[in-house]
Image 1 (cartoon, rainbow, N blue to C red):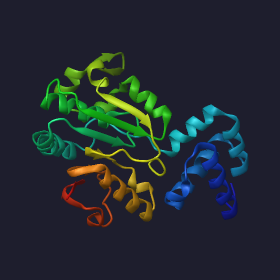
Image 2 (cartoon, rainbow, N blue to C red):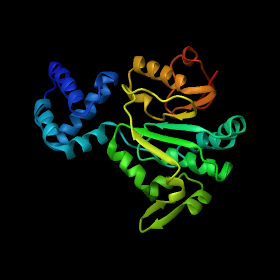
Image 3 (spheres, one colour):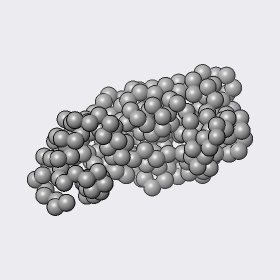
Length: 260
């Protein structure tokens, strides 16, 4: 497919009207390459033809949204980070606040927020914390609410949690209703929708790497404002916040920041 800059600008405007995603907030070269690969995969000759496909086919809109928002996650993802969360972050927060409000932004199909639910159940049995998972992709949220996962998504999860909170269903693993019941999910556009406040812990992992620097700094400020004083903000292992002190955040460990 021949790429014409003007055509791509028109495509971005029409795409925002069609699925609500503003590609101007994303790193253009990286995102445009992904989109071109998808058009080749589905056999669309150009951007205009593909926009017409999206406008007429709800299933294609769902598939494309899932592709663009890159729904990859797993339980206990990045073991060193989750050990820090388990051993230091959560005990510190529980000691200071007792009942926690936790938000997993860009939660994909739910493994990370469910991991937090399991860790909190071990730390404070029976205590009802407020756990929120949000994502732009409604298909991913539907999978999260179902709570059924392929074996490879549990590879990093300590065996004791797998045995206690999952039951095997053929080649899949089904999360216990008790843990599923602890998490609320909703659709949320990080770039446009208002943020809830009063969180003690926010995870937004492996999302920032796709945004422009300006967008990263704006979102960092918004996340910080959603935290209580002394709350924690955790990003992915390939991400470093730009000028976190401008958002009243200080780096306290690998991938982990705390609001001053």
